[in-house]
Figure 1 (cartoon, chains in turn orange, brown):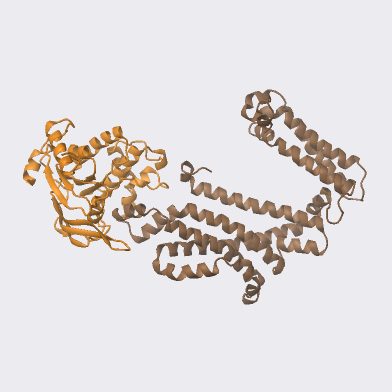
Figure 2 (tube, one colour):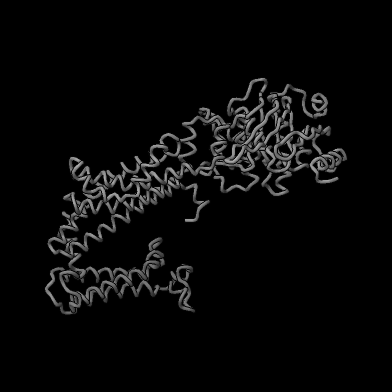
Amino acid sequence: MVAAVAASRERPAAQADGARLTIEAVSHAFSLRSAPLPVLDRVSLAVEPGGFVALLGPSGCGKSTLLRLVAGLEPPDQGAIAIDGDPVEGPDPSRLLVFQDPTLYPWRTVRANVALGLEARGVGRERAALADAALHRVGLDGFAEVYPHQLSGGMAQRVALARALVNAPRLLLLDEPLGKLDALTRLAMQAEILRLWQETRFTALLVTHDVEEALVLAERVIVLSDRPAAIRAELPVPVTYPRHRDDPAIVRLRREILGILGQQT
Amino acid sequence: MSGSITAGVAPRAAVPTRGGAHPPWRILVAGLAWLALAGATLGLPEADDLPDTAAFGAAAAALGLLVLALAPLAGRLGALGPRLRHGSPWLIALALALLVWEVVTAKFAVLPMPFFPPPQAVVEVFHEDWPRLGASIVASLILLAGGYTIGAATGFALGVAIGASRSVGYWAHPVLRFVGPLPATAWLPLAFFVFPSSWSASTFLVALATGFPVTVLTWSGVAGVNRAYFDVARTLGASRRFLILRVAIPAALPHVFVGLFMGLGGSFAVLVVAEMLGVKAGLGWYLQWAQGWAAYANMYAALIVMALMCSSLITLLFRLRDRLLAWQKGLVQW
């Protein structure tokens, strides 16, 4: 199935520099005062290098927790997560998480926000130039000196994308990055994410509760159940990019996924 | 001001171009008020014999004439014109207050004389006792600067350490809870025999008064930093040192400044008490000394100087905050 998806992709066949992600039988629970609350139930999935997979599920089902585990912010209770075969043991700038909130630092200019990872890793002189190049890639030339509170929601999320991309991540974890944007900005940002992915060939794992967003962006959609999240279905999206929302295949998949989620009979 | 209360009067401050064309009446009234003060001071017979009456009256007259001379030029004075117009109600109020004070003390002796000296007696203190007043200001400032710096630096470091380290928090938290609310002045008797000199004891007390609010607010600032800020930095490969220095501290800085303001207020109180009771220098000591000699004019003069000193220091701290936290301007209304 992986091969079929790769063939359907309309991208240069150059070797992808994205990471291979493997998640094997990961279970996780929140330790609450009364009793542990299971959030992930033996989730297994693999994303091929340069692939784009969307995780779709009801809100609060544990999708974001899975991304935090892959990012290395927390260790999983059970199971294994590996990047190119190496187990994940902590956060690493090659695996970056873009959050639903842009979480820019209000005391830093846009440029200094984008350069955060470079600064943390001790990159010196070329920092400003790299940050400005990343801002150019997300279409924010001329905003380097601005403070985050002067940005709109969509612009702030672009800065958050630039802050991740400047580190040349091999795996980009997108945690409902467009969840708080208005409908029009959302459409523009979906195209933006797609363009950046096609340009850079990082591996992308997107968490969303928007069926259409998953179908427009991802090569493969994984539908999760309600908490504790388990994989309900895995659907390849064999449609070439750029995709149209009213493409018959997309419409059919959308109906199928909504059926799985119990929204339609 | 008057425009918002009196119907039909155009608010002059809001229409500077029209106000500049005519001599603004408010500035004229301010000049006349100061001339009235001069007239009452110089013209009315005095109940008692006071040395500086003529100088005080002349100064009031000079100020009145200067304001009157500037009134027609208000439109051409650049930045000074609008400021003069804006400040003129205060000039009027000040002249009237001094006039009342002058009349009820020097002229008709309505208020008993040694306790309520006339304004010229206070002016005379500034004129004749300025070496001692000046030395007191310097002594107070040195003591305050030493204690405040030590207290603020210690409080900041301790607050960051408590916020960043679980084990430091474990030991420091109960101590702060138990000892912190104790007013710094309560340590005074103990401090004066434990420390080798009254000066070091006072420095300790001022540092204590500053340190507690700075510690608590720095700590709460660091503890209240958005967890997502740390997640972002951690995924980007930040070290623990980076998380503290570049994430926790800048994010906590607005809280730190609240602590610095509270600490400054507290340090003034302790400073004055310490100077009154132990240190034989400074404005607190000057107040005590003046009261001992029943030199009430000196006391008023010292109070005025102290108010100027404290408000200037607060203003200085505001300036520093505005400079360091300029990024906050778009977020918070101040």
